[in-house]
Image (cartoon, rainbow, N blue to C red; front, side):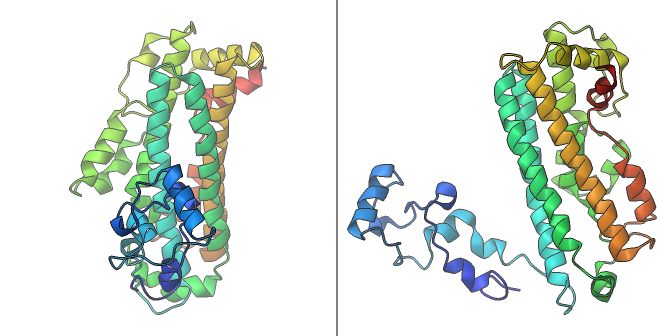
Length: 320
């Protein structure tokens, strides 16, 4: 499917960039002048009585150039002629873009926590929670596929499976669910291997949050703060008590650790919902069939869905 055909093809060319995303500037269309400033936008709006810009030189539009629309819409290559494969394919790519967004946002959160910028980290986590909610909503579309629709093209997947998503694996790693074994599918892929290995070896957002608690006076053992970051995190009673202490201080506006704890819990819950919805969607569509990636399918997903990110934060609630 090319950029100019099928769903979203010619329609995307007709989009008004307007203020969507703030990229209605004309930097690549010099005949219209301007550098994307508020003053230039006001001047152009006044010239047209507020009507949209519709004439551009150079064989493109600022929106296509900014978002690489032609490239983006050329990347859909379903392997069958079954109509239901297109939503499955496109939603898979949407998920990958959201994984990338989540990873970049979460690495920023980690850096902010390392710099003691707690309020800014909490603000970004607020957005991450919304982004994770958007990720969860992709299952609403995928869950609308009937078993017969999915079965009609499932064989075209071969051994392709979401388990092989390196961006999702990096999201799991930056959140703290370190499983070195699941890095193996990516270690033979040039460029990708380096990214996955780095995500595995670096501290997680949760590691950064625990280091912050220690700097703020929490009695956390050195083994919790100086360890092999590539290994799975083991729940800690000391960390559980530290989070319980944060909650005991209350939710006053200046209790920034309280609001950080709740923002982390929001993200953890959203990711748990993602896994639970994945399980339900797979069970609804293929039942107990094995997965394309070699697992037992639903049985594997059910076990995975029991995992909790930031386990001490969950356990602390039992002490309040």
